[in-house]
Amino acid sequence: MTGHALIVINPNSSDTVTAGIDRAMDPLRGFGIPIRCVTLAEGPPGIEDQAQADLTIAPMLALAGRLEAEAAGFVIACFGDPGLHALRARTALPVLGIQEAAVTTALTLGQRFGVIAILPASIPRHLRAFGAMGVTDRLAGDRALGLGVADLADADRTLAAMLDTGRALRDTDGAEVLIMGCAGMSQYRDRLAAETGLPVVEPCQAAAAMALGRIALGY
Image (cartoon, rainbow, N blue to C red; front, side, top):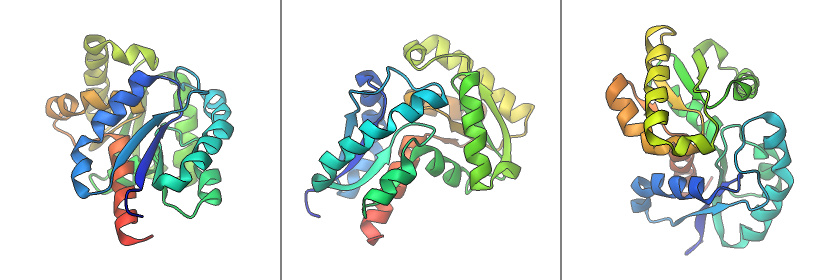
């Protein structure tokens, strides 16, 4: 396994989003396992609904297959975990989805978690996943920013919306921990945590941390 990397796959075609994911990995790069972030060129510019997520599965599986010989594990970096179970069925390596990892991490940080989604169309697929995980009784709320993936690059607008949404999840819904419901939000984590006073789970970090642990322990 020496020299093999944790491969973090961004299933959308935005290199800007991949670069943000790569920066979010920096705190985890001291554990001795290389982390490599890659973009799925066949993906849409942003994944904002179920149909877009589902269409990424076949090319994502093909990309993972091409990279498996140099991989120590995989992270699927889309908050919806497209192809998660299919990839797990195809490889013996650890495979983590950022939504599942974010939720399981949040459950250890507070009793009730709130999710900051990008668009209202994203929320139904989140709720289906939470129902499948059996964690809906721990969900305080899932609120949308009303911004698409590309809009997240507008720092001032996005931060203002995230702070408003985070405060609503805290004050109205009773969330004790916040989950950033998109792989493109990582640059706002520290400010959101400082302004709301709540733990904030960045999902790519949560999944990578979990994957590194599994790799180290031989799962």
